[in-house]
Amino acid sequence: MSIRGKYQTVNLNNIVVYDKNPRIFEAESENEAIINIMYDNEDKIYNLADSILQNGLSPLDIIGVFKEGNKYIAQEGNRRITAIKIMKNPSLIKSEYPKHYAKFNKLTEDINLSFLDNVYVYIVDSKKDLDYWMENKHLGENQGRGMVRWSTEQIERHKQNTGKPTRTKDFLDNLIAKKIITSQEAFDDMNYTFWQRILGTIGRRELGISLKNQKYSIADEELLKSKIHLVIDELKGSKVKRIYRNDDIQVFFDEINSKIEKNEPTPKKGTKNPPPDKGPNTDNPTSTPPKSPPGKNPTSDEEEQKPKKKLKVPRNRTSNRDNLIPYYITFHCDYTKINNIIDELKKLKLNDSPYSIAITFRTFIELSLRYLSENHPTYNFQDKNLAATLKDASRIIFGGEHNTKNNKKINSSISTAIKKDNNIDILNGLVHDMIIQVNRIVLVDFYNTLEPLFKHIYK
Image (cartoon, rainbow, N blue to C red; front, top):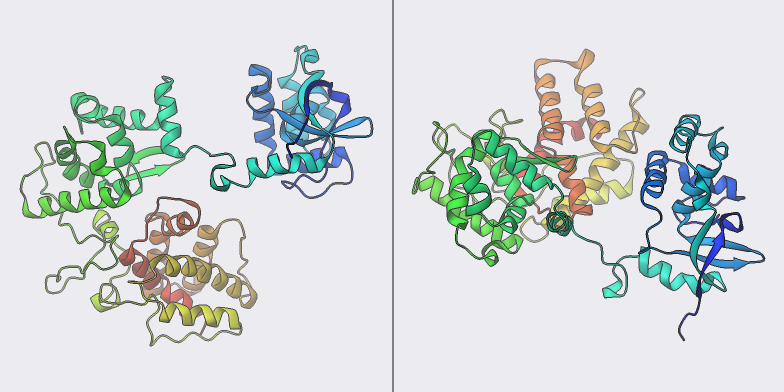
């Protein structure tokens, strides 16, 4: 049976913020619900209020209410109703958020807010009638029934279509300004869609490009210069299907790396330095790295981008190992769960289960730090930032009075792996990002770097 409702304009005083909003802790009153909505979202609610003042409420996203007595409960649109109510009466948050109380006062100073006295809403008879639409909107795509959110690439494409600046164009302008590529190469030789795909996770790693705060930047200029002209030459005149999927992009860069290894052709506008040696396809868990020259250890793609690599490990501990934790390593722990995870990381094969291993390893790191927090007098686990708390653990164990030459090297290696190589961000990305791939050698290298820390925790 279809859900029936009606569109109507309702006075703001008759609309109540929903006190059982899943985004917040359950509240006992509307005022408490408003305070809870503001928690950890102060700036976002303020920015939303500013947007409403500038542009009004979105006509594409209606506020959904159900009737309860002579009031209308805003089950959908609580943030918007909260922003409006605070603009109309900033004292609602004065005691809990004095800084934002002042900001809201300044925002609405000398502005006639009467246009917010009435709000256009969709009214249904009961909460149950709204539940279906709420779930479709907030519980994901639901096989096409729900809201399909734009991917990062689709957002970029929308900005391009509406003439707004994009991070891709900003980055290309930066490359032109640095004279790494020409305007002809950036905008004529290469289709814009090509750039969007090349600047994905695989391409950024291969070209020495980083993505921070939604902006591209050069992480390794020498690596970028050694490949970028060859990439442009290879894609000039091609169809986008050549690099349409991640597998296609990886194959494309494998071909680029092979040509650079053979020095045919040499990039027409590279640096004075010869192109760096390129290793195997490290995203392919079945690929076997070539033999290293005598006295040298093999490195992953990321290691080649960063000459001052962390720990030098024997080849048989990285390239030829098919388990993350070597079978001969023994960790002693009081918790059955952690012991079971250790056993799984010893048994699971990188060739068969790289994603399961990587995500389980991410769990193992966090549980290890929590275990350390229970057993070390000066270490406290920070729940919100795994990278920071991992660095703290390394500093406490290997720094200070324990700062021997070897410990200093270990601490430096762990810090580099976290800060420069972004290994924690990569592990987090495997859980939250649809594109990030497992790099087997980098994963094993990261474990090798952290192994001294684990040995100390579980000694």
